[in-house]
Length: 103
Image 1 (cartoon, helix red, strand yellow):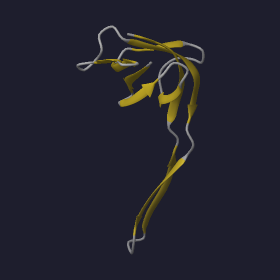
Image 2: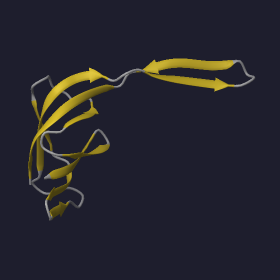
Image 3: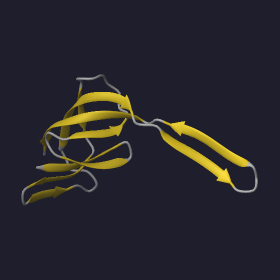
């Protein structure tokens, strides 16, 4: 069984037992979280596609970690103009372990 959920402006394909990294969500480690925006639920040959959401479908998970990703370097450069800018960015994330999918 799997589902497609939307959170943080992105869509994720999840199964029970998966650990996914999503945009930062409020909550502490160990708290339960429920994803209500379920776009698709599939169980073998039985597939329910929402228009746009599947009615009554929920995905429950537990917060495993709140953290920040590795640093990425952003470098802007214009040749012959003596222009360059360098800065870094670390994105916040929440790691969620998927516990159960209910349709």
